[in-house]
Length: 526
Image 1 (tube, helix red, strand yellow):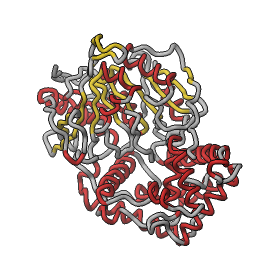
Image 2 (tube, one colour):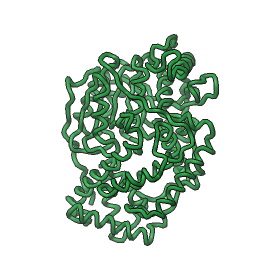
Image 3 (cartoon, helix red, strand yellow):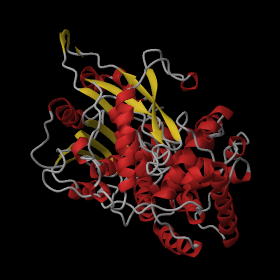
């Protein structure tokens, strides 16, 4: 399920028993070998700890952020076999009350964060402690991020040469021809073949269940008896799996912008729901632009704004801007505005400027990446594909994809086919598939957890938060009403942040599900 990485939002214990093993991991049962391997790896990690020092130069992190590595098995069923290293970053708790620096704040341990993806790095998460909205949390917690397996520099995956990954301007048809579909299907099959050829047998071990097991090993390496975790987007699915596998190891958990964990929806049906939700979010953006027609001149109704967008797309098809921006790049830039309404003024400004004869803002926002960014982008795409394709069964017949998405595109044309091309390698995947866990916890099995969601989030539609709320006994849902920014924790909504701080700092949740008024709409830029 494609989701942009969130940038805002973000003593050793020796394990001597399998008390934290999954129910399915009882001796001799399904997953028993992986459960034993996880306990072995966690015991080793707890004994070794993490030696923090300078961060890898390529990450370009400030000196105040320290990094180290944690060793995990590539295959948890064989913990003495090949091992890989995960890179972890940390900034120590400041212990200073941001309202009164003379008062010392008790340290509450480490807060470990996953920003989503799959394929996103969390190494930058400790920097959020510099943001005012995070300072109280940063006073009490060590802020800890990490690069999940496959994400550079943690045993990075690659499916193709990064130089080939950066493609030039491309079409973005909302009603693709049979010939175009055949071309894209061939490309998807070639990409899946490249993943198998480059990664070999290791490819099968990059999936969400192993990501959850890695989380347990990192917890042990940090010396935390129980895990305090915050996951955003895909990170919520990872957190839900951890809660199912290791409920006794949970201290506190925050799920921000929730992937629907229903096994029947992971991942094919979740992507269909995402495409449909983005149509509504695209309409939200067009309504906002229309409301500021005096600034942008793109039309005073959503329909007129759509015509302006289509005009720009047609011009770019005839002559790409700067030789790099075609209709697909334009669509990608506008899609990102569906994730974050902070982007709305910038994207509207670029579209307006392009139609008025100045392509540079659009080139700056939608153009291809330089080579160093291409390496990062190719790696992220490879991990995304490996995790989602390995996680669950996918339709192997393109006719199924074609039927379902042709129907969907009639009412939701904006993202539907783009989402297909992103995920289509899973139809031709060459590694074995996992069976998704049925995440469910009964009363008392898991400490109370906090779920945060925006009502009109398109990347992770709101139904996912409702589903997780039903599945995790004792969880409480806080909804940001009438807005759709993807990732609400630590943003401009003081109501949301108040619930986040009350939970992380005091363990206090609302008595029942509640909501917060929407954040202010973005201001236009002249």
